[in-house]
Image (cartoon, rainbow, N blue to C red; front, top):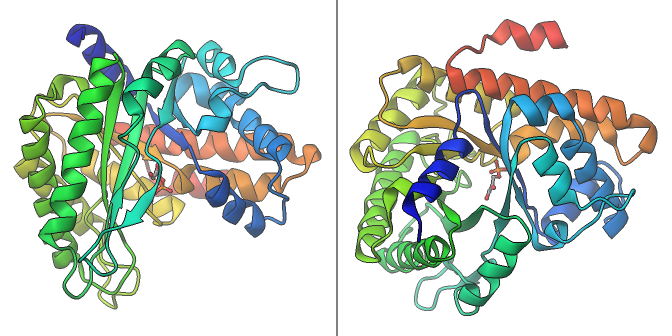
Amino acid sequence: MNLDELNKVARAMVAPGKGILAADESTGTIKKRFDAIGTENTEDNRRDYREMMFRTAEAMKNHISGVILYDETIWQKAKDGTLLVDIIKQAGALPGIKVDEGTKPLPNCPGEVVTVGLDRLADRLPKYYAQGARFAKWRAVIDVGPGKPSYACLSANAHALARYAALCQDAQIVPIVEPEVLMDGDHDIEQCEMVTEWVLKETFQQLYYQKVALEGIVLKPNMIVPGKGSKARASVQDVAERTVKVLKNCVPGAVPGIAFLSGGQSDEEATAHLDAMNKIGNLPWALTFSYGRALQAAPQKAWGGKAENLAAGQSAFSHRAKMNGLAALGQWKADLEKKAA
Ligand code: 13P
């Protein structure tokens, strides 16, 4: 493993004013997104939709450092025969690959899951590297509720994340380490804070045991927010302060950067929260975005599965990428959203 090279890639992923586009929805998940815009979930539609984003030159060049792809997409060619990974590279961004194989129920832990996919990972990674992937993603899912999470769930998931991260680094691929505490449920912000702190402590402990070099990872956590069903809402400042506090308590300064998931926050919330954290300043790591829904909801709606809406889809994507790029610098303002509307 060449750690200098891994560190260089990790730093490029969180370069100032840039963040990651999570376009790695599985075929089942993208179906849900396409259903919402009345678009059939065909291979061609998935390609056209993703090609539309990857060819949005302004966004890709200035605000997107890397794109997380699903297995289908990393081998896929654009309509004109160019590999989609080559379009991403030509735009100056890094291709990345989701390598986990989803979740399975965890025995003895009702309602809890563990992320799987370690068995053949060492064989798969060199193929992805050869195809251009310079980073990977593995998502662990932690549910909050009565009796949840259990320590069994936390430790199994943290162990798998650390095993995955070690295998990635061995294959010269930067692992995005993503332990996601879900927003589903009616838990309050304090519960999210407590669980997230526990999850991160356990994750970094396991990364240490598996000898993962922290200089060569990117952490992808949730923000500290109340559950979607909680009646007690939290201000932007409260979310920002609690998230920074927990991260400072759990994430060593050797980690080059933290790129948040959006997790079901609205587009503008996800942007405002990231911006408020960067406005706090004096942080030991870069703080940026690795959004799926918060970057793509607007372009999906504008595109609606129709070729004639391509420019509208690209302009919606460009706008969200720019807003989040500004938030990654702590330079976003709410009235920039209104001006665009
Ligand atoms: P969301 O931003 O939609 O949560 O997706 C990010 C992601 O990659 C989840 O694994």
